[in-house]
Image (cartoon, rainbow, N blue to C red; front, side):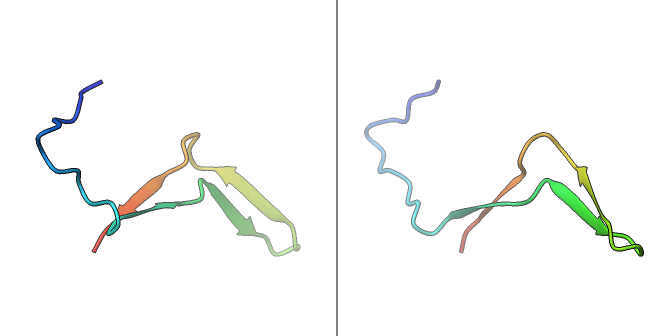
Length: 50
């Protein structure tokens, strides 16, 4: 693993947030049943900032 240099200031993390997006797609059918499909085995994430 790469070490962060101790002489540099730490990056600010207060302006960023991680959001988890669902990896399951749900469809409603005409007869009232619902179908679920797994889109991926990994849970997709998005990183948002200001």
